[in-house]
Image (cartoon, rainbow over all chains, first blue to last red; front, side):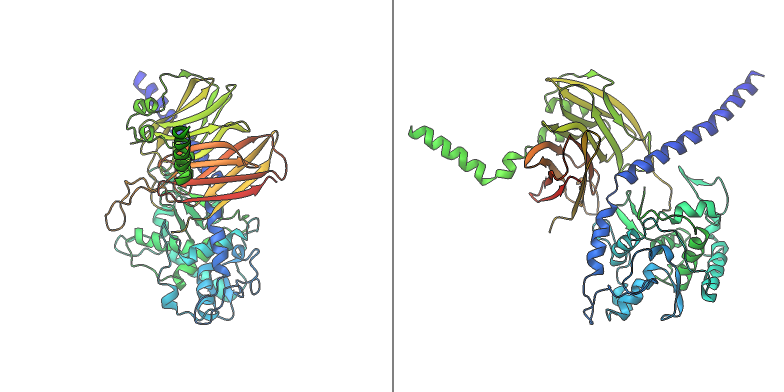
Length: 263
Length: 145
Length: 104
């Protein structure tokens, strides 16, 4: 009888402890956010946006991110979306690459030589993402959903989310498909559900304190596939854009707070 | 007179040659100490009284030891310095803040912690030292964003 | 190598001025290995100074235990709009940087 009572008390204590841990981790995240150096990268990105580069010696200031050439306010919050001139759905980084090639005359090969940076030096895409995302602070996340290709990208993204692939036969849903899953102390958000996707999508791109890197959604897709032991997806590919689109549509309506912070 | 003038010129020359370095002292001995005790010795601190007027606001659990946000302050009248010691770090002394007239004894800083450890904060006031301690658990996160 | 950017905000609060300063700096401990497995040498800010209208109010000695790309918050007694705040740092390589902002 006593053993049963003790077991019962232990069972009560365990979830309470888990709750405390979750609360303390929230506190950690809040304090880290308050003391984040992410703003420094926004300034770097602004300088890069205005810098003439490539054979055409042009800056990116005429790049149309969906709100009109050079219009940055709210642009990030409305991506991914369909672009007529490219006849495809594009996320921020894919669109930036498009502008680097068309406006600056650079080759895709040269522009994508270093898509992901390091602690010592951000890649161009990371700097630019920090700056442009910052310009959408306070805007509601509303990716394009009306155009047939936007609908198709959503469907493709959703299919890919559940598609098991690679050496380990993993899909996104293998980790993110069910409630109450965790890896060490991090709870895994169930990303196909709006209530979980919203705060997550609203936290990208972000400064990652454990590696001092500034990471973007293209990086995240790439790294998830790496962790799933599949071949590396191409930067700005239909696959990566479709997944980002699916997640962003699932998260729509959330207010974007600017570049985030992660452990 | 000659000797005095020579001494003055020498002293002046010394400060001109490396002005920034002369003004910016950095306690090599204390910062290079490998134990909290030696660090405090290097700072000339013999003992400190525990005080709940020295406050440490830090998360109980840090998702990563690379950045642990810590907010420290002292309500003790006449506090002129705050010292941060991370007990289990390879070099425990993390920082020393000297507050002159015009600044409040308060600072928020991000520190690195190698492992779960106590953070000890000492306040200097009126030539005496007061301290407070808080444990921060350091975890290694899972994969992902 | 040029020192990285710095940003500062000084805002008048209730009886004190809140100063938040961000700086780009690797704060290398000398214990980290690079991609080739070589130890990255120590490179960190040792001194930080906060001045109000030219007068030093905070003198800090910090170590490599302060996080990369440090962010500090200080509180200054009183203060008035337009007060000139200057934060400067000096690292173990003799490199330095500083930034100024007026209290808003």
